[in-house]
Length: 255
Image (cartoon, rainbow, N blue to C red; front, side, top):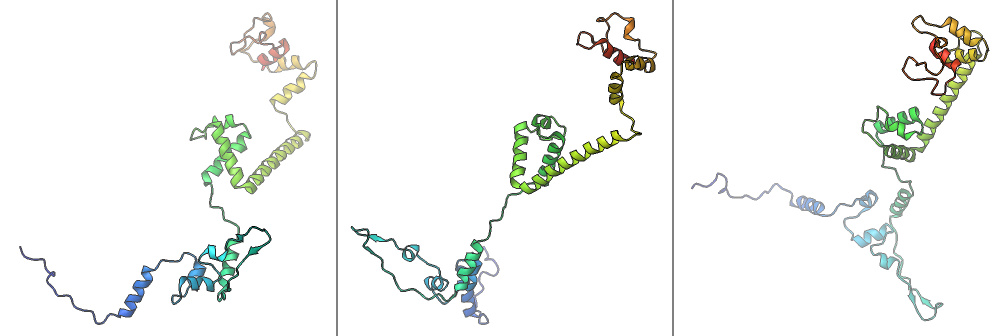
């Protein structure tokens, strides 16, 4: 069987390659990468690990940096041997590390925009009625009342400032709606709705007869033609048995 092409070719030495640079790059790749950027930039390749850390004010062995006190029989007699202090040549590394450690921790947990909109919609339309939230048509994931409550609590815990602003805006809108309704009723040309007109007419003794006379339809008879207690409403149930008075029945049938 013939040999593959190129296998019998003699390997030649590369004279044009810089062996010193090649070996240096290989040593750098083999050395572990220092994750801390402050220490990595101040590191000196010509010095040992202990010397580099001592120049930055750091300790290689914490047991030697902070030794345990040797206690004798008497508590007052304590021998503490202080070794020679090494010179700190790069104190800016220690200062940078202390400044970075004093910064507040950044929160990595966030909520999706869909969940925030879902919580705002439920609270805006149902308040604190979690059962009504579970029956809402926009409860696409069929969450139970407890699950919806937990989602609202998570939003409160993650974004307390936004939640407080949202609650304040709801209260402000509610007050504006109530104020606008009162101002409309106070206007001279305001026309009351059906329920308001009914309440105003009931306050007068002659209001029932007037409503019967003006709003009686041709296809509906008044309750005066039927004995009290046996008359059925258009929906098929007895109004007198449900505790409704005869006057209110006349109003219901006369509309």
